Length: 327
Image (cartoon, rainbow, N blue to C red; front, side, top):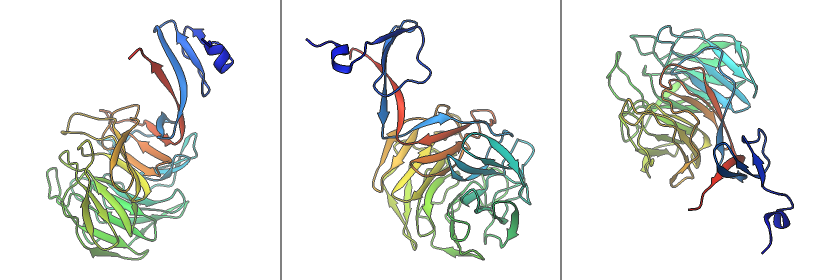
């Protein structure tokens, strides 16, 4: 019988700790944990820890992707923040603030051309909309309906806003309202089938996805530019989750809470028909923000369970370590 070295050209290493930068195909025996491990490449993608935000916050919003992101607003419980931070793939830098401090906003666009809309500054829900040109935020025309804890999709000139909580205070009215932004004004269009808040989503203004919501919903709806249609559910129902994706056929849903207190790290990927569970976040969290694509996304964790400045990056494909067992 051929040996491992004869097949692979190298021996199985014996190490007291895992190597810091293992390469694809590398196999080693960890004498501390007494397990055999190896490095593989997965096309499913995985989360890695990224540089921390300068300011810890919850219910912030995001735009961009894992190498060029923007995070804005949020709540330090208290205060409410107008802070904006820019990510270059390795570190966060504070840049010019929003004109109005708030949390529970929705966002759309990129690092250099973003839109922030809605939110609250306690006790009032807000309809305020601001546009980002890469340097400054400018106030533009308001949403028709003030709300918080909802989601946005699209760009800073063509965006979609959907769901949310429309009444001041906790336990306010859930909304099914959907509005479209054309670069100048918001227009009300056809509602979601299920009113809800604390949702996530992705896509563009003519082709989007809305999923999850309070309390622990699995409901997923697809927007075709005119109407919402119920499609296949999430595998794990949750609210206060994050989402990312530039197409309604390729979306990530991650983090959240299943019942208001049990935090999850679960990540699911939508392929246009079904949700599939993929690699988890490193840290369970809720009230998370996210933006990007199924190949490059950013997640600012929000609360894990206390308010945090932790962020994670999703990249696909990626290299991960597997532990081999005799089963």
